Image (cartoon, rainbow, N blue to C red; front, side, top):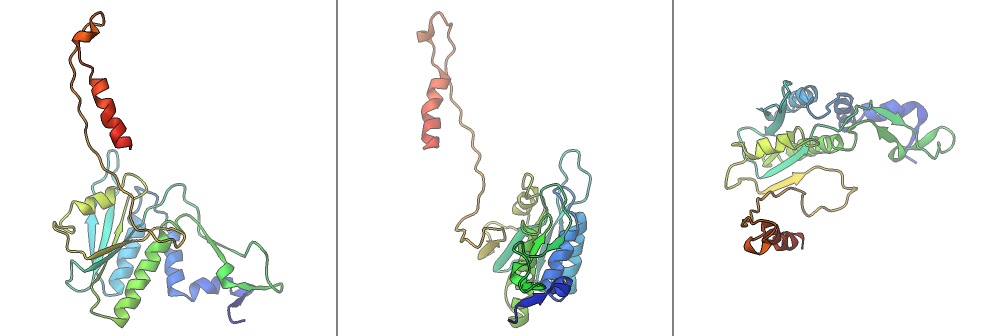
Length: 238
């Protein structure tokens, strides 16, 4: 069958595919949260070479950090606020694990050939989320090749795995105006091809209860703030 690949062609499977080769390149560059500069520079140059207008959005370093960190924002021409924004993150969790290729665990079919779909690609970030980054980049390139006027933009943020600093910075910047100008935002995150109808986030609020202090010998003269807040916590929990 045409999808059978010989053992000697293992490396060629990757090298012959611009998508897989790009994926390998960005996985081979360590980018643990806080140290995303090198992979960011690589992606930025790659997008620039494919005629995207690319902006480097510097992200303020956290306490004790002094390495340059930046989000990558790319669009076509001067369409700075496209209708559709594709986004994912370029940082990974520690530790760094080098890129590697592995034969199917079940062994080779016919002794020396295997289905290319059974090839295992391993290494830190191969799935979360550099697979999404690679897929987004090439989906955009192919879409713009067929539809040059497509209103598509790309955002690759830092620090997703630790505090979400990159996305918070983007959200509070002029690239995300109020009211928003994006019609659709698509997040690249591994979900085993399951449909995700929402995206996790956080909501913070402060609940204050006031009481009246009293001596423990005369508790009925006081008003417990703890007792007052318990029904509120129960309501939130439900």
